[in-house]
Length: 475
Image (cartoon, rainbow, N blue to C red; front, side):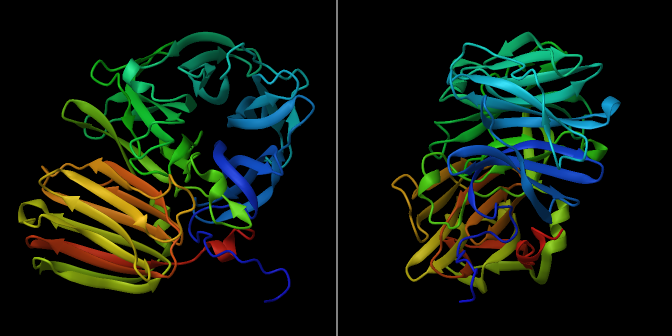
C-alpha cells in the first residue's frame, strides 16, 4: 500500500464525512454569496471545534480548515449562522460548554471573508442561564428583528434582538407531556407554504436524545403559528410527529437565506447510543443527504415530506428501467450485483398488490442481508438490519417499523444506498427511514413478493457517481 493511504472501508461516497476525527451535529447552515456553508461539531482529541465545508450545489463539498476553536471560556458546541447584510458579514452563534462553571452559555463570532476566518465578540458570552440544558441557538430573521430559538432541556426558549448582541426572552414552548421522551436539543423554527392551499404555517423541529421509534436519538416536529412572539402548535398537532423512523437521523437543522425560499435540511447520520463504537477509521460520523422539505395537508393535519435535493440527480449513471410487469407469488428478482452506491426508485399500484409481504432484499455478504419489508394488511414497513454485517454495539442491530399509507393510488419507494448508509423515502417522502449498516461485501439488490403477486408500474435503478473521492478538497 502506498505511504499515506488510509484504509477507509466504510466511508460514504455521496454523503459528507470529515477527513478524520469525530463529527456530529451540523451547525451554522447558511447560504452566502454563492456558497452553501456546512459547519459541524468536530471533536479533535476531546477539544470541540466547528468544522467547515462549502458547496455550490449541495452535492460537491470542499473541506475547509476548522472554523471556530475552543477558547479560555469553553468548548464550542452547536449553533447557527446568519447573514448580517447591513454590516456585510456572517454572524455565528454557538453554545459554550464553559470550562470553569460547567454551565452552558451562548457566544457569537463574526466573519468578513465568507466564513474563512472568525472574530469572537469580546463580550462573550452574550446569553447565560442557570438551566442545566441551555444550548443550540438557531437564529433567523423575522420582519425587523432577529429571533433565537434554543434548547431549555424540557422546552425551547425564544428570544428577540435588534443588534444580534443583546437578547430578551419572549416566550417558550414545550408541546404536551407525550412529546417528552428525552431532553430536547437542536431546535429550529421556520415558515413554510402549504402545497396546494398556499397558506403559511410554521414548523418547529426538535431533536430528542432518547425515545425515538427505533430507539435512542430521533427528531420530532410541530406545525402551528408564530406571530413573532410565541409559537402555538395547532390544536390537533400538540404531540410531535416523527421526522424519521430509522435509527440514524439526528440534530437536523435547516439552512438560512436559501434562494427561492427553499427549505433544506441536513442531519447527523448516527445515534448517541453507539457513536463511539462505529467500525470506521480514521473518521467517525457522517451526514445525511441534503433533503428538501415540503409541507402538505393530509387528513386535517399538516405533514412534512422529505426527498433528496434534485441536485443529487447529477450523480446518476447507468440507468436500468422496467415498466408494467407482474411479479408472481414467492418470486425474487435480482436488479443489480456488486454495487456500493446506488439509487432505486419503485412504484407499485396499490390495488394490484396481493402479496402478503413484499419489498427489497440487499445481500451484504455471505449469510448477510439488509431487508425492507412492506405489509399492505398491517399498513407498515419494517427495516431489518439484524444481520447486515458488522454490529458494533448491542443497540445497533434491530428491526425498525414505520406506518405506511396504503390508501393512495400508488406506493412509491426511493432508496439511497451509499457504502455504509441507507436512506429510504416512502410515498414521496411522507415517511423516511435512515439507517447505517456495515456490510461485509458489495450490495446485491433483489425485489421479492411472498404469499401473493403484485404489479410493478416502474422500477428504475441508477448507479451513482462516486463524487466524494474527487470533490471534497477540490470543489
